[in-house]
Length: 491
Ligand code: CO
Image 1 (cartoon, rainbow, N blue to C red):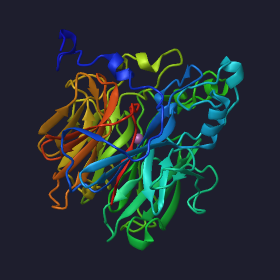
Image 2 (cartoon, rainbow, N blue to C red):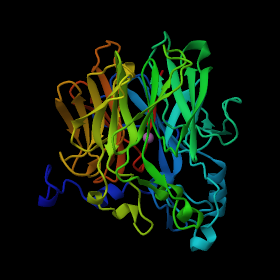
Image 3 (cartoon, protein in one colour):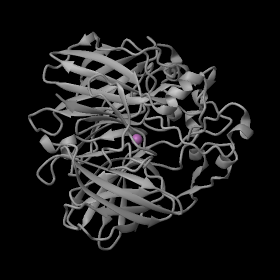
Image 4 (tube, rainbow, N blue to C red):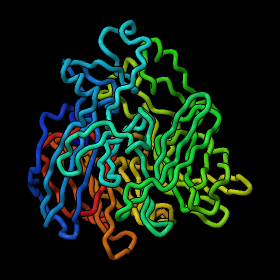
């Protein structure tokens, strides 16, 4: 270990190690048995760990402007009898196939990727490329690759073969937005559900809230469906649920579409936080809860920009929402190279809780941890309920922005923390918590895929959820770029 990469120093990572994960995935594998490098796979883990994220970032020498513009690739890791079988497939979207055939980018990306030829080629080309790269969800008998601005793509649960764009058997209109952030209701109304939404935005925004059964023969059946319209532009990436409410933060942002129309910026590069102005909590009653059929409520939210929430819960007349706040909307400017960004110039994600009084509309804001984090989760059985424990990806250092190199467990009541770190040369992704049957809140396993900068490949890491003790490292036969979201499907 050299001086410059000492743990805990201001340089706990080498940016080249971090950016070296951004490569095109060279091949598709089927049921490749993963090599166990260290430890053992718990025999109680039975199911499939699905992940989504960009798998193709460059065509004909041109790189995407932002990794979020990369074409989706699904990985599946099937846990059977202490072994793990790995498969991966690119989501064969219509646009992906066209670009493969052409050998170049034919579409602009939301986060700034432009077609070659400058503004003249890009101006007024407002076609959206469905990149299906954000999350992967089992809904009924379908495996869906999700991208929030359009219909999901349906894949084969076992082979990951792409069936095609899905309107969920007629539930969605053609190209209707369908969020990449479903929430799993563990049984607030007697059986498991998947709650999700779609948002159509403009000067007014309409949120469609949908609840699907996630249990037994009814799995995948639409149970409730409501639409509510709010004033103002909305960028709603995620939301949270409690037994009675679904909770959104309508961030205070401006959208100036001119540079997008003129072919100079991607649509998301035209978003910026409105100075000194507050967002809103949009509280939409759940159709099976005690406020069903009531109108939504709007309450002023603190300043800041939120992509992701940890959890939400109810305490008499109060709602508590735990979210990761940024000072501004982070976007990569047209002249910047995403692989060379200076992390110090980007806002860090800080976990905060908002206690919202439903009657007085008073909001109390509290910082839960000052350390930069992302991808926070509770035990899935505590979704919508007061949880004590949370797990998240965090930076190595206690302050400032940097790549995510640690998995952190945070006790939300006492502030007690514990860590597993792969710094200085390793980089973590979203952790998933898989509870054990014991029903003790923090008993189970944490799964995450890391990028090993030294070996130049990806690894599957299994940690003990209670104390983050290392359980196993499995080597992936592929280099997978830093990914987005995933899910666990019980056997
Ligand atoms: Co997300």
